[in-house]
Image 1 (cartoon, rainbow, N blue to C red):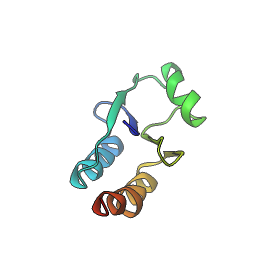
Image 2 (image 1 turned 90 degrees about the vertical axis):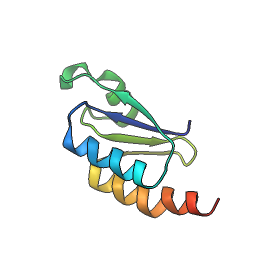
Image 3 (image 1 turned 30 degrees about the horizontal axis):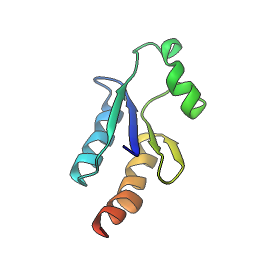
Length: 85
């Protein structure tokens, strides 16, 4: 799987990204993170910070935090690529 979303259960920003991915029929894997920032070592290793959501697109070499930026990326890049297949 080339798309991975690091997310926190119940996080409205993470849900927004899940909704954008689902609405555009993008296949992705979710890695659920710990509620405590101090325990999000995997997110820190991937993105350099501990906040979620973080989207990782291995195919395009993109690691992106911030739900608004991720949703824009989903619409402009991933959805367009999916539509072209």
